[in-house]
Image 1: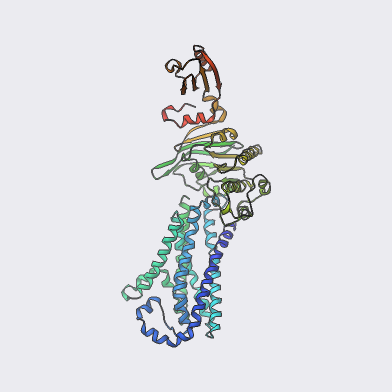
Image 2: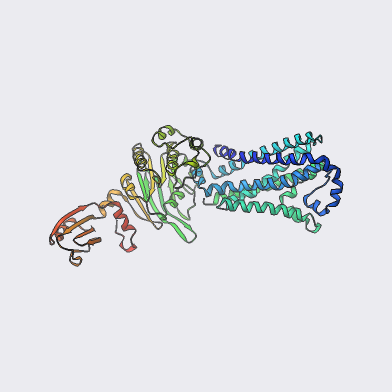
Length: 260
Length: 298
């Protein structure tokens, strides 16, 4: 039974393509300015307070890897795409319940577990489209300005972001099975993911409070470490994967119990 | 065999009991009408039967599956068709794509045959559909996998009279082919026309569970009398008369006693015209929705 998976996947395809387009525009903006920017990067880094650099996890702005990590990944990928995954997952169950689509779905010989799993599998569409799209954009963009990004860290920055994005999706999913209205579920999921990111970023500023950041998903995904220092934190990725599975089990348990 | 067996089914939403000890059964091969005004609890019962809601207490069996047994109920749904009151279709899909989607979920042996009777514009996106077209798409969806039992919640809502007739006729043919049809309605004439038996729900409780014929015969006779002079209510009205309406020389009432007694009573008056007939179901229905103490025994 893949009817729901196919339906959801085609629904998510358009948004994924639009977001890939947004990243193309970002690349078209950032890559051309890098050669000029790299020359002044040291002065710029000196001019900004170090706290701000820590907040965004920025370093080595004079290298193409550091520049792209800062401009494209630390904000747009981690926060924007994280929020996007939380948002689409939050709408998935709550939206169907609200529009009474779930009545029709569950009147068929399909279990609630299967509905949820197919909806999660459909997230594969934005995961694949966005990851492959943005990898291609970065490979092409960096070659066009003759500053080719090394391929392994580029692939790893995407591969290791998948568990992180799934945790964001998991947060949305829990909201989606708890709330009756898609809007409320999406609003809360969006605020949660943003707040968690903010807590992680802010906690880096003070050593005494840095531990709080370990309760946030973005602490387990360091785009700058991967791109600039080629440090691949597999254990952190495993922590995120475990976190996602816990959220998935929690939402399944809640969905099985609820009235729709 | 019993297609649906409901036992003391109760569903509380906070303080409100939407279904309060609901008990009735639907036999295989019959058309069962589930009657009540909006808000009486009809949709709640239907959504409990499909496992969309969890009962607070009591249970029901649908085609032998206990609604509290999720696995058994899910498997049984291959033999159930459902036409909900609100049709939550995916608006951006066309009619064709929508039916393809449901075909993947539950099969579509009878799609073409049904589309000859109910013909929504399949090439257009469902979000552009009129209420009637949505309903027709819903009907095709509910019957296309040739289920043994079809549960319909206000099935004719939004349909034009021609299509309503077509649906009634179709339901009748399905019954003859051995299907069980359960449908809720607040339209009495519809229930009276197509159903074999009826359950009447009022404020979450079943107040009648009868064959239509029995309900009609047990509910007395509807009588119109025209007298030569203005009616003297004190002399004319007896204890057996209920719902008495007097307008000058004419009187209309439901007679709950023996017909012989009525005739003996009437000869004392100067009768100009007289009509005695079976009450329409809506006359009976009104009784169930008057104050608690005036509900007739059935």
